[in-house]
Length: 196
Image (tube, rainbow, N blue to C red; front, side, top):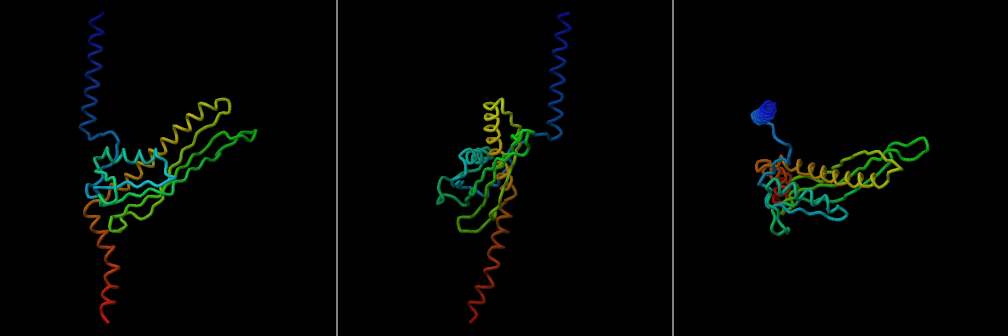
């Protein structure tokens, strides 16, 4: 009888090992922050109030996990990631028959801009938004407040992921294309002014 349980336990570990090997062989990976090109390094993260500290820390953490070199000052950076214009909204999305809120929707929005230190806009001012809904129970107010606090952290984490996803496609080649496009509109004007 004891021998049967030893074999059953061993069989479970063998099956689990085979499943893990198969997942690894098919290319499965846990979801994480996408790789950010080293062409953006050193990158300065510039969060201006009223952007919450939790959002700035989440973006910084995502960048550091991706191995991005961050600069402490504008002078030491090649690019500046500006996060501004934070707005938070909480609205009742469903009501009870007694006209009390039964469900709330939380919304976080922020403006994102990536600029080179010489003023070339790499990512123009872009608005990012994320939302989450939760049920509200008047009889369990403390638990619902904790749930809302948890959701606010999740919203910050989601916005941080969106920001890092916007940086992922920026490669050295793409940066050069952006610089070339930025200089083209200025070139004809300079040559026309020089002609007379």
